[in-house]
Amino acid sequence: MSQGGAQGQSSRLVGQGKAQAVIIGDMHGDWISLAQQIKEWGLALGFDAISISERTLKDAEQGLEQWLAQGFHGEMDYMASHGSKRARPEELVPGTRSVICVRLNYRPSAANEAANLADGERAYISRYALGRDYHKVLRNRLQKLADRIASTVGPFGYRAFTDSAPVMEVALASQSGLGWRGKHTLLLTREAGSYFFLGEIYTDLPLPTDTLVADHCGTCNACIQSCPTGAIVAPYQVDARRCISYLTIELKGSIPEALRPQIGNRVYGCDDCQLCCPWNRFAPTTKEEDFAVRNGLDSATLVELFAWDEPQFNERLAGSAIRRIGHERWLRNIAVGLGNGPRIPVAIAALKGRLDHSSALVREHVAWALARLTG
Image (tube, rainbow, N blue to C red; front, side):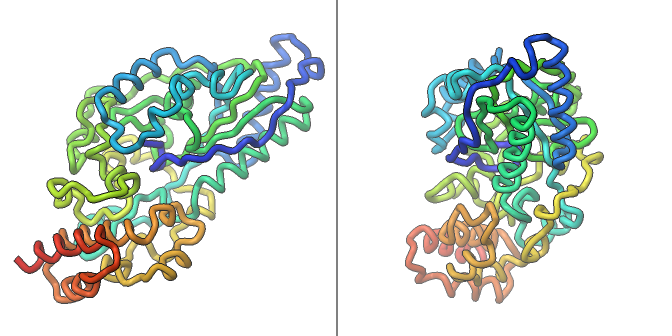
């Protein structure tokens, strides 16, 4: 899974060409100066941090192969469908010599995390999905950064990614010194925790790389202990098949019945491993207006959201990452949440109203939820 959530399938070729090294020169000092300028331009564009990684992922490829061999990717076949390209940037984008890594904070100012999880009548939606779809925000900003670089060096070869294509974004960000990989497998920083999105620009510019950051997880195992479904099977290793983010976003079919009670009221993603992390006490709220809470999703009730028909779902979640799972899986997830909630008449009535839904997937989860509430 990605830093913010489910991984996208599409990539965007935002520019290509041949680096005009003659404009800058081949002197090492010139590349150092350009790298510093890129960081300043990135911060001016609104990124919260920016650093540069070498193109070679030293240890990540072996770890990926082992993870796939254990079947931990579940139905995410795209994780295995690109061969070595995921761990070898120069194979994915020929000519790549360095990778520009960026971070953009997303934590909304009013998210009501504890209140939502504690109230079985409410729907819990992962913090990253409460506002506008981050793919669009980051892609636009990465394009502006690439344009700014081109205005200085002339046409150059590059390709930008935001949770798209076979890119090991956490491994690259960690290698660039942007942070360290936490035991929950997300990137962590001392100043911002883990509530941020990552983006990359693969480039043929030979930029100097930044130094690694030490791992500061220490002996803490809070994320492992807090996972509702036990998906963090060992430090730095997640079995996605048990992860609530996978079950509510990536999984297309039935949610395994044994795992449904553990999902609680989490209807889109899960933040438990982040909510308990000591480093997230320092996570700042985002400065990005597009990531502000929309449609009252930080306090909506399960019954309220379950009542949306498909046109309402598409209209209200236009521009949201949630819309990509579709109305059918939206109802599937909320039915599970209702089944885990209090036995109140309004919840039972809402479920009975969907018993004859056209989707067998929805009907299955509605019937399970009703059985839970009616005994």
